[in-house]
Image (tube, rainbow, N blue to C red):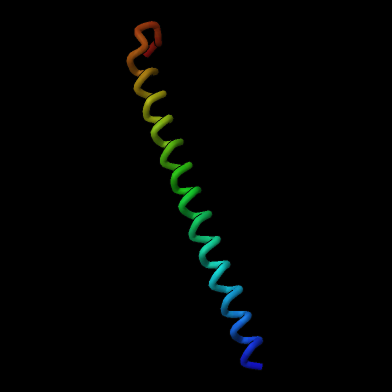
Length: 52
């Protein structure tokens, strides 16, 4: 019985590590998308041919 609990704990700990990594990747992707959005909006606002 104790071995089953240890195995389950190990599995859950690995899932936590995997989810933390996934969260970091998604955070990095979100930051990249925000940066791109800011750059595109800045370009759009500088475009002299754009109608206001």
